[in-house]
Image (cartoon, rainbow, N blue to C red):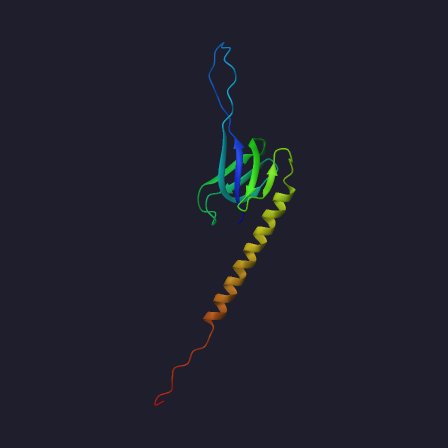
Length: 122
């Protein structure tokens, strides 16, 4: 799975009655997780590689930038396209399936080895 850092802006809600107070700056955060899913309007991550844990969805409009674990920029709000990111997720999922099959094949082949006991008197 692809490790990502999502740079995003949160919403703010204030109860204000007839004030001339200037608007506040929206808070900006960075969240780290494993990329789970890319939808038309959102990105989903999980805090564990095995997808057993806290899942978090980000509306696309809140995301400023997505960077992978190697520091490569995968998405920016100016770029606005998720195609490369979707392709990356599909490649990671395919690689994970291949690793899983390979690991299972190794386990199957090692457990099928035949062992013989030493003959008596030798």
